[in-house]
Length: 100
Image 1 (cartoon, rainbow, N blue to C red):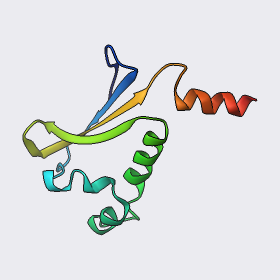
Image 2: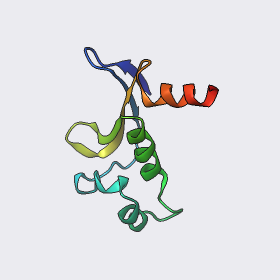
Image 3: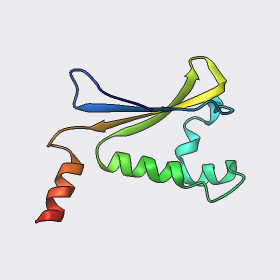
Image 4: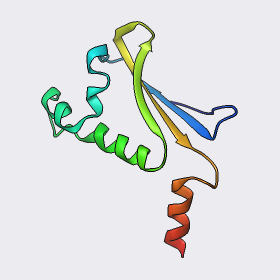
């Protein structure tokens, strides 16, 4: 896992890579969709990535999946989360509301 600020933006980039079977290009956007993802999974409900996407977007960020090695979709995946950093984020506001 790599965490780094994105220069000249309010974002923090979090990247998680694996060396599994990868995700075909045709399925990269589908894995975040609840109804489609359920059909693609063999075990469980397949809601994990759908929930992650909803939470990340709730706080003004986004998530995407890429090839671990660009152009080689069968050699692992890389999940990239872009989250707002600093005091003006939804997370900071949520925490301040909890305290109040």
